Amino acid sequence: MLLLYFITAGTAVFSDIRSFTTISEVMTPQENFNFINSYLSRVSPVIRAHQGFIDKYIGDAIMALFPESADDAVRAAVEMQKQVIIYNQDRQLSNYPPITIGIGLHAGSLMLGTIGEQERMESTVIADAVNLASRLEGLTKVYGAGILVSDSIL
Image (cartoon, rainbow, N blue to C red; front, side, top):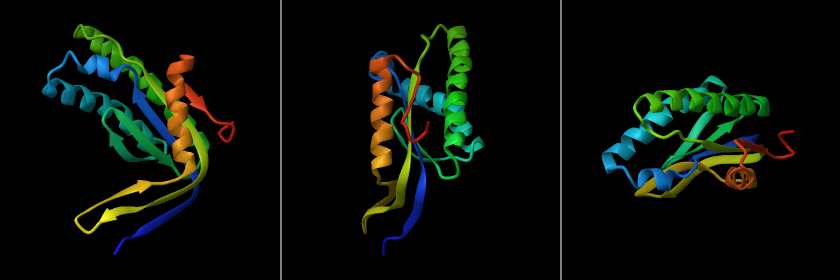
């Protein structure tokens, strides 16, 4: 039996490390895991501190939801960027190159539920709001922006 949970409205946030493929190509698999986990340990607590929850990690990307307020999501995005600045200071001490991240935010109707079949299930969010947040994150590269928000956030 599949369980469904509903969120009628909320804010979807996608973040991604820019040029991750290029960065990861010069690392061993173990170094890649260490790098991603080090980065995630910096930014993931920020999401929770602003009443968000992480739906999933997709490699170096994060998909998070903020069910209470778009303001929570915006504050989290700004704080995530600040954490990357601090993280880069630590990376510099180890002679690692700095990283940048892009973050896209969109608010709208969301549905959190369980997908899969009897042998493999997982929870996820399916909504146009999620797709648009992901597209906005992708556009941060095009526009050289750290954070892009939709009109629903404004």
